[in-house]
Image 1 (cartoon, rainbow, N blue to C red):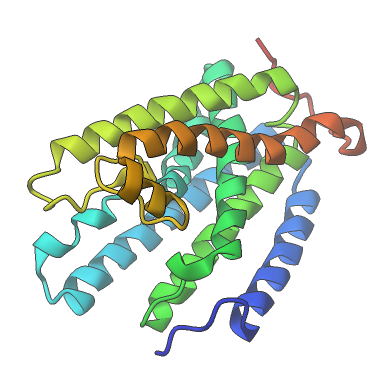
Image 2: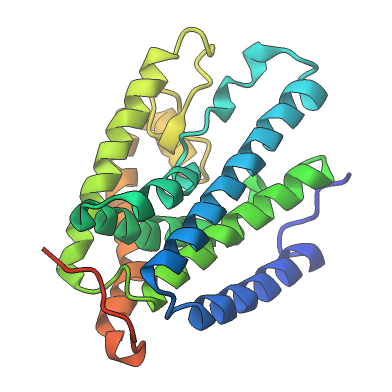
Length: 254
């Protein structure tokens, strides 16, 4: 296929229809009990895992003609890949502080990441319809999950809880950087989880910073800006909590 242009009819139609549907469903499902919540999130997580297996398999067999050296950059530990793991893990945890941190992370960072992907959609459009649809559906799913967790009161209860989302983000950054370094040689320098190096960031603006000042200086700018951007999506759910009534008892906050 010819990749659809940014802010063309496909892009804008999918975004506005998908956003409206996500808001509608997230609001309608906000009163699910804990058992129903587990079923919903685990189902979404497993579905995302299947989508990821398809994407990697398609690229390996079709796009790269079974050349395994070309798929290292697809290692599934990007920021927007994390929900497929957390959606399965968080509902099963008995420790509500840890699961709450995961929920807050998905509300803040993945809701933010999902929106940002649609504002600069170069990473969403591809030369194949299935890969393009996969990317659009995947990131809109992140938007839905974030909205659902916020509307349901499983995340975004208090502003001070945001610090645990940031802490989890920093831990994941550390893991991502370790993976990047561990597979640096075998991947030919293409491994760049979380876009924090040591490879240069492919993201607009940050790519130029990396090229001029290096990945480390870029991280000193990029990571705080990510935290700030995520906070702007997290804060409204805390400030306007009274407008989102919760019938069930929320998770205890420690």
